[in-house]
Length: 215
Length: 289
Image (cartoon, rainbow over all chains, first blue to last red; front, side):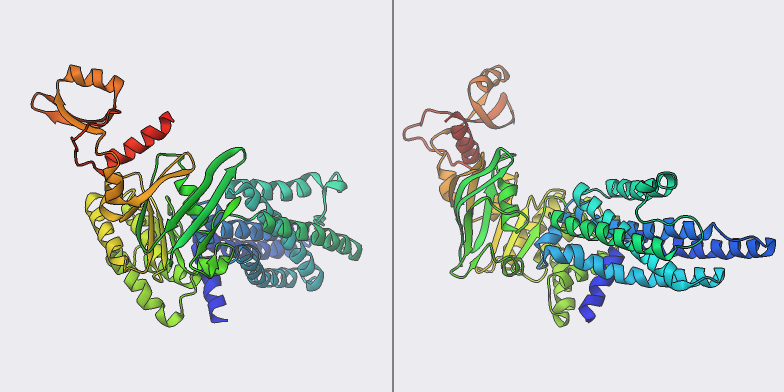
Protein backbone atom coordinates (compact mmCIF):
# COMPACT_ATOMS: atom_id res chain seq x y z
CA UNK A 1 0.00 0.00 0.00
CA UNK A 2 2.86 2.34 0.88
CA UNK A 3 4.47 1.74 -2.52
CA UNK A 4 1.19 2.61 -4.24
CA UNK A 5 1.12 5.92 -2.36
CA UNK A 6 4.72 6.64 -3.40
CA UNK A 7 3.95 5.75 -6.99
CA UNK A 8 0.98 8.13 -7.03
CA UNK A 9 3.11 10.84 -5.43
CA UNK A 10 5.80 10.29 -8.09
CA UNK A 11 3.20 10.58 -10.87
CA UNK A 12 1.83 13.82 -9.46
CA UNK A 13 5.26 15.31 -8.80
CA UNK A 14 6.52 14.36 -12.23
CA UNK A 15 3.85 16.49 -13.88
CA UNK A 16 5.06 19.46 -11.80
CA UNK A 17 3.08 22.69 -11.77
CA UNK A 18 0.63 21.30 -14.36
CA UNK A 19 -0.88 19.10 -11.65
CA UNK A 20 -0.84 21.95 -9.16
CA UNK A 21 -2.90 24.04 -11.57
CA UNK A 22 -5.85 21.65 -11.29
CA UNK A 23 -6.81 22.28 -7.62
CA UNK A 24 -5.88 25.96 -8.02
CA UNK A 25 -8.26 26.43 -10.95
CA UNK A 26 -10.95 24.51 -9.07
CA UNK A 27 -10.45 26.84 -6.11
CA UNK A 28 -10.76 29.91 -8.33
CA UNK A 29 -13.95 28.44 -9.78
CA UNK A 30 -15.41 27.99 -6.30
CA UNK A 31 -14.49 31.57 -5.40
CA UNK A 32 -16.22 32.79 -8.56
CA UNK A 33 -19.27 30.68 -7.82
CA UNK A 34 -19.50 32.21 -4.36
CA UNK A 35 -19.22 35.72 -5.84
CA UNK A 36 -21.83 35.06 -8.57
CA UNK A 37 -24.27 33.31 -6.23
CA UNK A 38 -24.03 36.02 -3.59
CA UNK A 39 -24.68 38.79 -6.12
CA UNK A 40 -27.54 36.93 -7.81
CA UNK A 41 -29.12 36.24 -4.41
CA UNK A 42 -28.98 39.96 -3.62
CA UNK A 43 -30.52 40.77 -7.02
CA UNK A 44 -33.15 38.07 -6.49
CA UNK A 45 -32.22 36.25 -9.72
CA UNK A 46 -31.70 32.55 -10.41
CA UNK A 47 -28.15 31.33 -11.03
CA UNK A 48 -27.96 29.65 -14.45
CA UNK A 49 -24.27 30.37 -15.00
CA UNK A 50 -22.51 28.13 -12.51
CA UNK A 51 -23.74 24.68 -13.57
CA UNK A 52 -22.75 25.04 -17.26
CA UNK A 53 -19.36 26.34 -16.10
CA UNK A 54 -19.02 23.36 -13.77
CA UNK A 55 -19.85 21.01 -16.64
CA UNK A 56 -17.34 22.64 -18.95
CA UNK A 57 -14.53 23.14 -16.46
CA UNK A 58 -14.27 20.18 -14.11
CA UNK A 59 -14.27 17.35 -16.70
CA UNK A 60 -11.84 19.36 -18.86
CA UNK A 61 -9.49 19.83 -15.91
CA UNK A 62 -9.59 16.06 -15.39
CA UNK A 63 -8.75 15.59 -19.06
CA UNK A 64 -5.83 17.99 -18.66
CA UNK A 65 -4.54 15.93 -15.73
CA UNK A 66 -4.86 12.76 -17.80
CA UNK A 67 -2.76 14.34 -20.54
CA UNK A 68 -0.12 15.57 -18.12
CA UNK A 69 0.16 12.12 -16.58
CA UNK A 70 1.18 10.78 -19.99
CA UNK A 71 3.49 13.63 -20.95
CA UNK A 72 6.70 12.20 -19.49
CA UNK A 73 6.02 8.86 -21.09
CA UNK A 74 4.95 9.82 -24.60
CA UNK A 75 5.87 13.42 -25.29
CA UNK A 76 9.40 13.79 -23.93
CA UNK A 77 12.55 12.57 -25.61
CA UNK A 78 13.67 9.37 -23.94
CA UNK A 79 10.26 8.73 -22.34
CA UNK A 80 10.47 5.23 -23.82
CA UNK A 81 12.93 4.51 -21.04
CA UNK A 82 10.02 4.04 -18.65
CA UNK A 83 8.95 0.97 -20.60
CA UNK A 84 12.26 -0.72 -19.73
CA UNK A 85 11.47 -0.66 -16.01
CA UNK A 86 9.83 -3.81 -14.64
CA UNK A 87 6.28 -2.52 -15.09
CA UNK A 88 3.58 -3.59 -17.51
CA UNK A 89 1.98 -1.39 -20.16
CA UNK A 90 -1.19 -1.68 -18.13
CA UNK A 91 0.63 0.00 -15.26
CA UNK A 92 1.77 2.91 -17.45
CA UNK A 93 -1.75 3.25 -18.83
CA UNK A 94 -4.89 2.27 -16.98
CA UNK A 95 -3.43 1.55 -13.55
CA UNK A 96 -1.85 5.02 -13.19
CA UNK A 97 -4.87 6.67 -14.78
CA UNK A 98 -7.35 4.88 -12.54
CA UNK A 99 -5.39 5.95 -9.45
CA UNK A 100 -5.48 9.53 -10.69
CA UNK A 101 -9.18 9.19 -11.45
CA UNK A 102 -9.87 8.04 -7.89
CA UNK A 103 -8.04 11.11 -6.57
CA UNK A 104 -9.91 13.27 -9.01
CA UNK A 105 -13.23 11.91 -7.81
CA UNK A 106 -12.39 13.39 -4.41
CA UNK A 107 -11.86 16.80 -6.01
CA UNK A 108 -15.12 16.43 -7.96
CA UNK A 109 -16.93 15.58 -4.72
CA UNK A 110 -15.48 18.61 -2.91
CA UNK A 111 -16.30 20.97 -5.79
CA UNK A 112 -19.82 19.60 -6.29
CA UNK A 113 -20.55 19.63 -2.55
CA UNK A 114 -19.41 23.27 -2.34
CA UNK A 115 -21.32 24.37 -5.45
CA UNK A 116 -24.56 22.61 -4.53
CA UNK A 117 -24.22 23.96 -1.00
CA UNK A 118 -23.87 27.53 -2.25
CA UNK A 119 -26.70 27.11 -4.76
CA UNK A 120 -28.83 25.12 -2.28
CA UNK A 121 -29.61 22.37 -4.78
CA UNK A 122 -29.43 18.58 -4.63
CA UNK A 123 -25.87 17.19 -4.52
CA UNK A 124 -26.36 13.67 -5.92
CA UNK A 125 -27.46 14.43 -9.53
CA UNK A 126 -24.81 17.15 -9.97
CA UNK A 127 -22.08 14.91 -8.59
CA UNK A 128 -23.19 11.95 -10.72
CA UNK A 129 -23.35 14.12 -13.83
CA UNK A 130 -19.87 15.65 -13.27
CA UNK A 131 -18.41 12.26 -12.44
CA UNK A 132 -19.79 10.70 -15.65
CA UNK A 133 -18.64 13.65 -17.74
CA UNK A 134 -15.16 13.56 -16.22
CA UNK A 135 -14.91 9.81 -16.83
CA UNK A 136 -15.71 10.40 -20.50
CA UNK A 137 -13.60 13.50 -21.12
CA UNK A 138 -10.60 11.89 -19.38
CA UNK A 139 -11.07 8.75 -21.49
CA UNK A 140 -11.16 10.79 -24.71
CA UNK A 141 -8.02 12.68 -23.62
CA UNK A 142 -6.27 9.41 -22.81
CA UNK A 143 -7.19 7.99 -26.18
CA UNK A 144 -6.10 11.21 -27.93
CA UNK A 145 -2.69 11.40 -26.30
CA UNK A 146 -1.86 7.72 -26.76
CA UNK A 147 -2.77 7.85 -30.45
CA UNK A 148 -1.16 11.23 -31.20
CA UNK A 149 1.73 10.77 -28.74
CA UNK A 150 1.70 14.55 -28.32
CA UNK A 151 0.13 16.38 -25.39
CA UNK A 152 -0.57 19.38 -27.64
CA UNK A 153 -2.67 17.26 -30.00
CA UNK A 154 -4.33 15.54 -27.06
CA UNK A 155 -5.27 18.99 -25.80
CA UNK A 156 -6.79 19.90 -29.17
CA UNK A 157 -8.82 16.69 -29.12
CA UNK A 158 -9.98 17.47 -25.57
CA UNK A 159 -11.00 21.03 -26.45
CA UNK A 160 -12.71 19.89 -29.64
CA UNK A 161 -14.64 17.13 -27.84
CA UNK A 162 -15.87 19.48 -25.12
CA UNK A 163 -16.22 22.58 -27.30
CA UNK A 164 -18.26 20.97 -30.07
CA UNK A 165 -20.78 19.56 -27.61
CA UNK A 166 -21.16 22.68 -25.53
CA UNK A 167 -21.15 25.26 -28.33
CA UNK A 168 -22.72 23.49 -31.29
CA UNK A 169 -24.56 20.85 -29.31
CA UNK A 170 -26.88 23.53 -27.90
CA UNK A 171 -28.50 23.94 -31.32
CA UNK A 172 -27.94 20.47 -32.74
CA UNK A 173 -28.73 18.01 -30.00
CA UNK A 174 -27.31 15.04 -31.88
CA UNK A 175 -23.82 16.57 -31.41
CA UNK A 176 -24.24 16.69 -27.65
CA UNK A 177 -23.80 13.37 -25.90
CA UNK A 178 -22.78 14.14 -22.34
CA UNK A 179 -23.74 17.72 -21.44
CA UNK A 180 -26.91 19.11 -19.89
CA UNK A 181 -25.81 22.81 -20.22
CA UNK A 182 -29.19 24.45 -19.54
CA UNK A 183 -28.03 25.74 -16.17
CA UNK A 184 -30.87 24.08 -14.26
CA UNK A 185 -29.23 20.73 -13.47
CA UNK A 186 -30.07 17.47 -15.24
CA UNK A 187 -33.50 15.88 -15.26
CA UNK A 188 -33.70 12.16 -14.45
CA UNK A 189 -34.18 11.31 -18.13
CA UNK A 190 -31.23 13.50 -19.16
CA UNK A 191 -29.05 11.93 -16.50
CA UNK A 192 -29.90 8.40 -17.66
CA UNK A 193 -29.02 9.25 -21.27
CA UNK A 194 -25.80 11.00 -20.28
CA UNK A 195 -24.75 8.10 -18.02
CA UNK A 196 -25.32 5.61 -20.83
CA UNK A 197 -23.43 7.73 -23.38
CA UNK A 198 -20.60 8.37 -20.91
CA UNK A 199 -20.24 4.70 -20.21
CA UNK A 200 -20.05 3.78 -23.90
CA UNK A 201 -17.64 6.58 -24.91
CA UNK A 202 -15.59 6.18 -21.73
CA UNK A 203 -15.11 2.44 -22.02
CA UNK A 204 -14.09 2.80 -25.68
CA UNK A 205 -11.74 5.70 -24.89
CA UNK A 206 -9.97 4.00 -22.01
CA UNK A 207 -9.89 0.63 -23.76
CA UNK A 208 -8.61 1.83 -27.13
CA UNK A 209 -6.15 4.20 -25.45
CA UNK A 210 -4.66 1.29 -23.51
CA UNK A 211 -4.39 -0.81 -26.67
CA UNK A 212 -2.61 2.06 -28.44
CA UNK A 213 -0.22 2.70 -25.58
CA UNK A 214 3.25 1.63 -26.60
CA UNK A 215 6.82 2.96 -26.45
CA UNK B 1 25.73 -16.41 -18.80
CA UNK B 2 25.77 -15.42 -22.46
CA UNK B 3 23.05 -13.61 -24.35
CA UNK B 4 22.50 -15.41 -27.64
CA UNK B 5 20.72 -13.66 -30.50
CA UNK B 6 19.48 -15.93 -33.26
CA UNK B 7 18.15 -14.86 -36.66
CA UNK B 8 16.74 -11.61 -35.36
CA UNK B 9 14.83 -9.50 -37.90
CA UNK B 10 12.89 -6.29 -37.53
CA UNK B 11 10.89 -4.37 -40.12
CA UNK B 12 9.57 -0.80 -40.02
CA UNK B 13 6.93 -1.09 -42.70
CA UNK B 14 8.87 -2.22 -45.77
CA UNK B 15 12.25 -1.13 -44.41
CA UNK B 16 14.25 -3.93 -42.86
CA UNK B 17 16.14 -2.53 -39.88
CA UNK B 18 17.60 -5.85 -38.76
CA UNK B 19 18.34 -8.69 -41.13
CA UNK B 20 18.86 -12.13 -39.58
CA UNK B 21 21.18 -10.89 -36.85
CA UNK B 22 23.15 -13.57 -35.05
CA UNK B 23 25.37 -12.65 -32.15
CA UNK B 24 26.60 -13.86 -28.79
CA UNK B 25 27.16 -11.33 -26.05
CA UNK B 26 29.29 -12.53 -23.16
CA UNK B 27 30.13 -10.98 -19.81
CA UNK B 28 32.30 -7.90 -20.18
CA UNK B 29 32.11 -4.72 -22.19
CA UNK B 30 30.80 -5.27 -25.70
CA UNK B 31 30.88 -2.46 -28.25
CA UNK B 32 28.51 -1.98 -31.16
CA UNK B 33 29.82 0.10 -34.04
CA UNK B 34 28.13 1.07 -37.25
CA UNK B 35 27.13 4.04 -39.37
CA UNK B 36 23.75 5.74 -38.98
CA UNK B 37 20.93 3.40 -39.98
CA UNK B 38 23.02 0.28 -39.36
CA UNK B 39 20.43 -1.07 -36.92
CA UNK B 40 22.34 -0.53 -33.66
CA UNK B 41 19.60 1.43 -31.94
CA UNK B 42 16.93 -1.01 -33.13
CA UNK B 43 18.93 -3.92 -31.72
CA UNK B 44 19.41 -2.06 -28.44
CA UNK B 45 15.74 -1.16 -28.21
CA UNK B 46 14.81 -4.80 -28.71
CA UNK B 47 17.29 -5.86 -26.02
CA UNK B 48 15.86 -3.15 -23.75
CA UNK B 49 12.35 -4.64 -24.30
CA UNK B 50 11.05 -1.44 -25.90
CA UNK B 51 10.54 -3.08 -29.29
CA UNK B 52 9.52 -6.58 -30.26
CA UNK B 53 11.43 -8.41 -32.96
CA UNK B 54 9.45 -9.66 -35.94
CA UNK B 55 11.47 -12.86 -36.23
CA UNK B 56 14.15 -14.66 -34.29
CA UNK B 57 14.84 -15.13 -30.62
CA UNK B 58 17.06 -13.92 -27.83
CA UNK B 59 18.00 -16.10 -24.90
CA UNK B 60 20.02 -15.44 -21.77
CA UNK B 61 21.62 -18.52 -20.28
CA UNK B 62 19.50 -21.67 -20.20
CA UNK B 63 16.40 -20.27 -18.59
CA UNK B 64 15.64 -16.74 -19.77
CA UNK B 65 14.35 -15.47 -23.07
CA UNK B 66 13.09 -12.12 -24.25
CA UNK B 67 9.45 -13.20 -24.11
CA UNK B 68 9.72 -13.19 -20.32
CA UNK B 69 9.38 -9.41 -20.20
CA UNK B 70 9.05 -8.99 -16.49
CA UNK B 71 12.09 -11.11 -15.66
CA UNK B 72 14.24 -9.45 -18.32
CA UNK B 73 13.16 -5.91 -17.35
CA UNK B 74 14.22 -6.66 -13.79
CA UNK B 75 17.76 -7.37 -14.96
CA UNK B 76 18.48 -4.52 -17.36
CA UNK B 77 19.53 -0.91 -17.17
CA UNK B 78 19.06 1.21 -20.27
CA UNK B 79 20.36 4.58 -21.32
CA UNK B 80 18.58 5.90 -24.42
CA UNK B 81 20.16 8.40 -26.83
CA UNK B 82 18.08 11.16 -25.27
CA UNK B 83 17.14 11.34 -21.62
CA UNK B 84 14.73 14.08 -20.55
CA UNK B 85 12.40 12.66 -17.92
CA UNK B 86 11.42 14.07 -14.52
CA UNK B 87 12.35 17.69 -15.21
CA UNK B 88 10.26 18.99 -12.29
CA UNK B 89 11.92 16.67 -9.74
CA UNK B 90 15.18 17.06 -7.86
CA UNK B 91 17.98 14.76 -9.02
CA UNK B 92 17.73 12.69 -5.85
CA UNK B 93 13.93 12.51 -6.07
CA UNK B 94 14.11 11.40 -9.70
CA UNK B 95 16.50 8.58 -8.83
CA UNK B 96 14.35 7.54 -5.87
CA UNK B 97 11.43 7.44 -8.28
CA UNK B 98 13.39 5.23 -10.65
CA UNK B 99 14.35 2.99 -7.70
CA UNK B 100 10.65 2.63 -6.94
CA UNK B 101 9.86 1.75 -10.54
CA UNK B 102 12.74 -0.72 -10.63
CA UNK B 103 11.27 -2.45 -7.55
CA UNK B 104 14.41 -1.90 -5.51
CA UNK B 105 13.52 -2.80 -1.90
CA UNK B 106 12.87 0.26 0.25
CA UNK B 107 15.63 -0.61 2.72
CA UNK B 108 18.21 -0.61 -0.10
CA UNK B 109 16.86 2.44 -1.90
CA UNK B 110 18.91 5.12 -0.14
CA UNK B 111 22.16 3.20 -0.45
CA UNK B 112 21.58 2.37 -4.12
CA UNK B 113 20.59 5.92 -5.03
CA UNK B 114 23.68 7.32 -3.32
CA UNK B 115 25.90 4.74 -4.99
CA UNK B 116 24.50 5.60 -8.43
CA UNK B 117 24.88 9.36 -7.78
CA UNK B 118 28.41 8.85 -6.52
CA UNK B 119 29.43 6.76 -9.54
CA UNK B 120 27.93 9.30 -11.93
CA UNK B 121 29.52 12.25 -10.08
CA UNK B 122 26.13 13.72 -9.22
CA UNK B 123 26.40 14.00 -5.46
CA UNK B 124 26.79 17.78 -5.44
CA UNK B 125 23.76 18.15 -7.70
CA UNK B 126 21.45 15.92 -5.64
CA UNK B 127 19.22 18.83 -4.66
CA UNK B 128 19.15 20.48 -8.07
CA UNK B 129 16.03 20.30 -10.24
CA UNK B 130 16.47 18.01 -13.26
CA UNK B 131 15.14 20.72 -15.57
CA UNK B 132 18.02 22.98 -14.51
CA UNK B 133 20.78 20.49 -15.36
CA UNK B 134 23.14 21.13 -18.26
CA UNK B 135 23.28 18.64 -21.14
CA UNK B 136 26.30 16.86 -19.68
CA UNK B 137 24.80 16.61 -16.20
CA UNK B 138 21.54 15.32 -17.66
CA UNK B 139 23.54 12.66 -19.44
CA UNK B 140 25.14 11.73 -16.12
CA UNK B 141 21.69 11.44 -14.57
CA UNK B 142 20.75 9.14 -17.46
CA UNK B 143 23.78 7.01 -16.68
CA UNK B 144 22.93 7.02 -12.96
CA UNK B 145 19.38 5.78 -13.57
CA UNK B 146 20.72 3.05 -15.87
CA UNK B 147 23.18 1.68 -13.31
CA UNK B 148 20.74 2.10 -10.42
CA UNK B 149 20.12 -1.29 -8.83
CA UNK B 150 23.30 -2.67 -10.47
CA UNK B 151 21.59 -4.47 -13.36
CA UNK B 152 23.24 -7.56 -14.84
CA UNK B 153 22.80 -6.17 -18.36
CA UNK B 154 23.61 -2.52 -18.99
CA UNK B 155 22.59 -1.19 -22.41
CA UNK B 156 23.91 2.23 -23.36
CA UNK B 157 23.08 3.98 -26.60
CA UNK B 158 25.64 6.68 -27.45
CA UNK B 159 26.46 7.13 -23.75
CA UNK B 160 29.09 9.85 -24.02
CA UNK B 161 27.19 12.22 -26.29
CA UNK B 162 27.13 15.61 -24.58
CA UNK B 163 29.88 14.77 -22.10
CA UNK B 164 32.96 17.02 -22.03
CA UNK B 165 36.42 15.37 -22.23
CA UNK B 166 36.84 15.16 -18.46
CA UNK B 167 33.38 13.63 -18.08
CA UNK B 168 34.16 11.15 -20.87
CA UNK B 169 37.19 9.96 -18.91
CA UNK B 170 35.03 9.63 -15.78
CA UNK B 171 32.45 7.73 -17.79
CA UNK B 172 35.05 5.25 -19.07
CA UNK B 173 36.31 4.73 -15.52
CA UNK B 174 32.74 4.19 -14.32
CA UNK B 175 32.09 1.56 -16.98
CA UNK B 176 35.38 -0.21 -16.36
CA UNK B 177 34.59 -0.35 -12.64
CA UNK B 178 31.08 -1.56 -13.37
CA UNK B 179 32.44 -4.51 -15.35
CA UNK B 180 33.03 -7.05 -12.60
CA UNK B 181 33.50 -10.03 -14.89
CA UNK B 182 29.90 -11.21 -14.51
CA UNK B 183 27.89 -8.25 -15.79
CA UNK B 184 27.30 -7.48 -19.45
CA UNK B 185 27.74 -3.92 -20.67
CA UNK B 186 26.63 -3.25 -24.23
CA UNK B 187 27.65 0.11 -25.65
CA UNK B 188 26.74 1.56 -28.99
CA UNK B 189 28.78 4.51 -30.13
CA UNK B 190 29.85 6.52 -33.13
CA UNK B 191 33.07 7.35 -31.35
CA UNK B 192 35.35 4.53 -32.45
CA UNK B 193 38.14 5.54 -30.10
CA UNK B 194 35.79 5.26 -27.13
CA UNK B 195 34.79 1.73 -28.10
CA UNK B 196 38.44 0.88 -28.76
CA UNK B 197 39.51 1.98 -25.31
CA UNK B 198 36.59 0.42 -23.43
CA UNK B 199 35.44 -2.73 -25.15
CA UNK B 200 37.05 -6.13 -25.17
CA UNK B 201 34.64 -7.41 -27.81
CA UNK B 202 33.35 -5.39 -30.73
CA UNK B 203 30.61 -6.03 -33.29
CA UNK B 204 30.38 -3.99 -36.45
CA UNK B 205 26.93 -3.55 -37.96
CA UNK B 206 25.92 -2.31 -41.38
CA UNK B 207 22.58 -2.28 -43.17
CA UNK B 208 20.89 -4.34 -40.46
CA UNK B 209 23.54 -7.07 -40.38
CA UNK B 210 26.38 -7.90 -38.07
CA UNK B 211 29.40 -7.97 -40.34
CA UNK B 212 31.95 -9.08 -37.80
CA UNK B 213 32.24 -9.80 -34.08
CA UNK B 214 35.51 -10.39 -32.31
CA UNK B 215 38.14 -9.24 -29.86
CA UNK B 216 39.13 -5.62 -30.39
CA UNK B 217 42.69 -6.69 -31.27
CA UNK B 218 41.46 -9.28 -33.81
CA UNK B 219 39.30 -6.70 -35.52
CA UNK B 220 42.10 -4.16 -35.50
CA UNK B 221 44.30 -6.69 -37.29
CA UNK B 222 41.80 -7.16 -40.13
CA UNK B 223 42.91 -3.99 -41.90
CA UNK B 224 46.60 -4.12 -41.08
CA UNK B 225 47.61 -5.01 -44.66
CA UNK B 226 45.30 -2.45 -46.22
CA UNK B 227 46.25 0.70 -44.37
CA UNK B 228 48.94 3.11 -45.45
CA UNK B 229 50.17 6.29 -43.94
CA UNK B 230 52.19 8.81 -45.93
CA UNK B 231 53.22 12.41 -45.79
CA UNK B 232 52.28 14.09 -49.05
CA UNK B 233 51.76 17.49 -50.60
CA UNK B 234 48.32 19.10 -50.66
CA UNK B 235 48.02 18.45 -54.42
CA UNK B 236 48.85 14.76 -54.02
CA UNK B 237 46.35 14.55 -51.15
CA UNK B 238 43.61 16.01 -53.36
CA UNK B 239 44.34 13.41 -56.07
CA UNK B 240 44.46 10.57 -53.54
CA UNK B 241 41.09 11.59 -52.06
CA UNK B 242 39.43 10.85 -55.40
CA UNK B 243 40.75 7.31 -55.66
CA UNK B 244 41.10 6.07 -52.09
CA UNK B 245 39.21 6.10 -48.82
CA UNK B 246 40.95 8.52 -46.48
CA UNK B 247 40.63 7.48 -42.85
CA UNK B 248 42.42 10.36 -41.22
CA UNK B 249 44.70 13.27 -41.98
CA UNK B 250 46.54 15.96 -40.12
CA UNK B 251 48.77 18.85 -41.17
CA UNK B 252 52.46 17.95 -41.42
CA UNK B 253 55.62 19.93 -42.21
CA UNK B 254 55.46 19.51 -45.97
CA UNK B 255 51.75 19.01 -46.55
CA UNK B 256 49.60 16.39 -44.83
CA UNK B 257 50.08 13.17 -42.96
CA UNK B 258 47.39 11.00 -44.58
CA UNK B 259 46.13 7.62 -43.46
CA UNK B 260 44.16 5.80 -46.14
CA UNK B 261 42.89 2.44 -47.30
CA UNK B 262 44.20 0.61 -50.29
CA UNK B 263 42.76 -2.46 -51.97
CA UNK B 264 46.21 -3.86 -52.69
CA UNK B 265 47.48 -5.86 -49.76
CA UNK B 266 51.04 -4.89 -49.03
CA UNK B 267 53.02 -8.12 -48.80
CA UNK B 268 55.29 -8.17 -45.82
CA UNK B 269 54.39 -4.63 -44.77
CA UNK B 270 52.14 -4.35 -41.77
CA UNK B 271 51.04 -1.16 -40.11
CA UNK B 272 49.55 -1.26 -36.66
CA UNK B 273 45.93 -0.68 -37.64
CA UNK B 274 43.55 0.99 -35.24
CA UNK B 275 39.91 0.02 -34.73
CA UNK B 276 38.99 3.07 -36.77
CA UNK B 277 41.07 1.75 -39.69
CA UNK B 278 39.42 -1.67 -39.52
CA UNK B 279 35.96 -0.20 -39.04
CA UNK B 280 36.38 1.96 -42.15
CA UNK B 281 37.89 -0.96 -44.08
CA UNK B 282 35.05 -3.35 -43.17
CA UNK B 283 32.25 -0.86 -43.91
CA UNK B 284 33.95 0.14 -47.19
CA UNK B 285 34.39 -3.49 -48.23
CA UNK B 286 30.75 -4.23 -47.45
CA UNK B 287 29.55 -1.21 -49.41
CA UNK B 288 31.33 -2.32 -52.56
CA UNK B 289 29.97 -5.90 -52.35
